[in-house]
Image 1 (cartoon, rainbow, N blue to C red):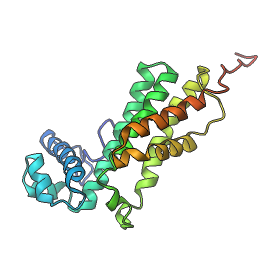
Image 2 (cartoon, rainbow, N blue to C red; image 1 turned 60 degrees about the vertical axis):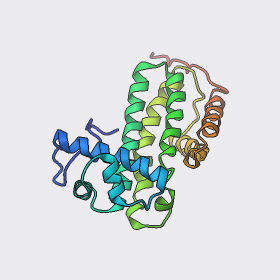
Image 3 (spheres, rainbow, N blue to C red; image 1 turned 90 degrees about the horizontal axis):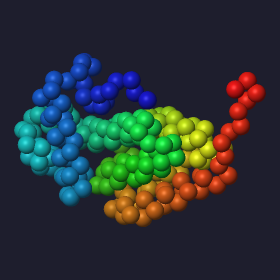
Length: 207
C-alpha cells in the first residue's frame, strides 16, 4: 500500500506535491475524461475534455502531454482509490463484510475501463506497465482484508490473494461493457464460495 496519502498523479514532474489549484485542475480533467470517453470514446478530441473540465486545452496538455498519459492517470487514480477503500473498510466494517464490500469495489474499478478498452488493448507500449501496476497495488490491499477475514473465521484459509484478485476482476468484466449488475452478482457468488469451509483458526499452545 502506498505510504503517500496523495494520489499518484498529484505531483509535478519534479515529484513535488502539486499546488491546490493544480490538483483541482487534475481532478477536474480526470473526471471530465472519464465522462467524455464513456460518451464519445477514447479518441474524443482533447479540447472536448478540456471544455468539460472547465479549463483551457493548454492546461490539459501541461498535465497530460499525451493521450496515453491521461488514460494511465485515470487507471492509476482508480487503483489508488481502491487501495484507500480497502484501508477504510478494514477499519470500519467487520472482516467478512469488509472483504465482500471491497470485492464489489473492484466492479467499479473494472467499470472504469468502459470507453478505454480500445486504447488499453491496442498494444501501445505506453500501457504495458499498467497490469503489473494494478496487481502490485491491489494484491497487498486484498491480502490484508483476506487475512483479517480468515482470522475471524469468515472465509476459508486456503485462498491466495493474487489468484482471488484475478478471479474477481475477470468476473467483474461485464462492468467494462456497462453490465454492472451482472458483474456485482458474479463477484458476490465468488465471495459466498469463500465462506465454504470457513472456521476460526485454532490458537497455538503459546497463545
